[in-house]
Each structure stands twice: as structure tokens, then as C-alpha cells.
Image (cartoon, rainbow, N blue to C red; front, side, top):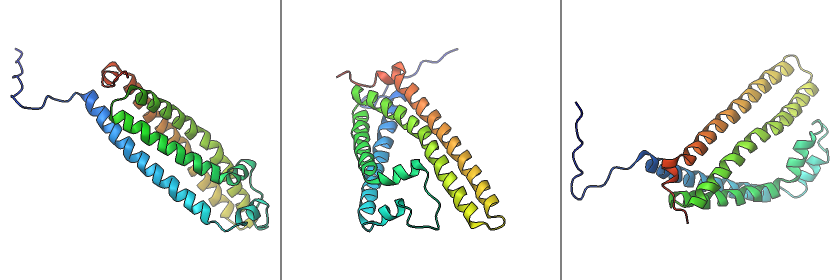
Length: 195
């Protein structure tokens, strides 16, 4: 025997669908994360501008003889910190605009959000190459110390770091994949304006 649901009370708010709630939560959390990203990028820019003149050039030129040479990928990264920091700020502001658009139910923002999810996933997997270069450099530092047990401790720490990097990249890929799938479902797509 089935029961019929009573009609909504006069003046009462209609029940929100799970699709509407998903879009609300996604938009609000994304705006919050984007604001944090903008603040982080601004702090990063200020910190880079406070580095004493010539320090990075001396470091990259290998004037600190007690350190092994940097792998080429790390060298390039350190050489381009300021443009990369500006790119971080630009992308954080773009993500903030898109996230606000998701809150306002813009279909263009929904599509832009999907693009950001795909690019974020690809960047996470690309960062594993940077992690490998950094761990190789740390191994070289450990080898130069030449103290019993230090090299083994560094290798064990590097294995844990590498495992965590891969696991976190896979977890983020799974989360992003789920969000993309959810944004492509008919009930969620219906929440967005086509303008």
C-alpha cells in the first residue's frame, strides 16, 4: 500500500532537489577555494619580491658548492618563479570568476568549470615529474653527506613522498572525474541557464 505525499503548505518553500543542492555547494566551496587561491598567489608574489637581489641567480649558478647541481626541471622552475606566480594568480582569479558563474547558474561557467577540473587533473599528474626531480636532488644531497644511515633514511622518506604524490594525484583525479560526471548529468545540466 502506497501513501500519497501531502501537498506543500501554503507559503512554504518548495523542496530543493539534490541537483540544486549539489550546484549550490559546489559553487560556494569553489568560490571559497578560489579566494584562498588568490590570497595564496598574492602571498607568493610578495614573498618572491622580497627575496634579496642576486640570491636566486647565485643559487642557480651553483655558487653554493656544498649543494649538488639542480636537475634541469628544478632549475627551470626556480628560474621562472615570478612568471609562474603571476600565472597562478591569473588562474586563481579565472577560477574565482568561473566559480561565481557556477553559483549564478551560468552554463558557460559550468563548461569552464569542467575545463578547470580536466586541467587540474593533468597538472597533478605532471607535477609528479617535478616531484621525481626534487627527490633525485635530495638523494644527491644525501649521497654527498656520506654518513651511515642518512642515505637509507632519505630513500625511505622519498619512497613515502612518491607514494603519497601518486596516491593524491589519483584521489584528485577521482574527485575531479566524479564532479565532471555530475556536472554532465541531465538533472544538474538543467540547473544552468543556456545563455
